[in-house]
Image 1 (cartoon, rainbow, N blue to C red):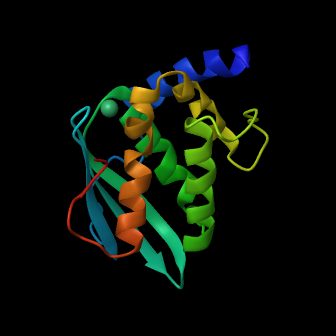
Image 2 (cartoon, protein in one colour):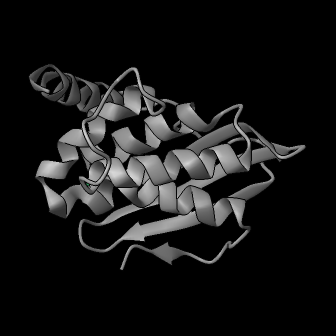
Length: 150
Ligand code: ZN
């Protein structure tokens, strides 16, 4: 667990400084806006879904280090997955950051996302970590109106 904690700090810093998929794609099939009023994080998530598979995922917006790192890792994690697989990942991630997922394991189904177990120690940051995921779900359900974590 202490290894994961070090990794958590490192991964959050890396991804918040240089987030992956931080762009507005030229084309996308779905997008949604998400807002976390507790922290001020505000993102738009763009996805391209073809044949039920998420071919591309990207995001734009402003937010704290945790929300940016989470959005960055989420967009990487869901590419190539079906909607159902993305939803399963979200459930696992949600359980992890709310401390319901049992012992975090980087070799488990969440892979590198397991480092977000560190968020469990800071309940106020759970909404930062899950904002991008809630927004992804709204995009996949084609709910273009802005969603809020409140
Ligand atoms: Zn935040």
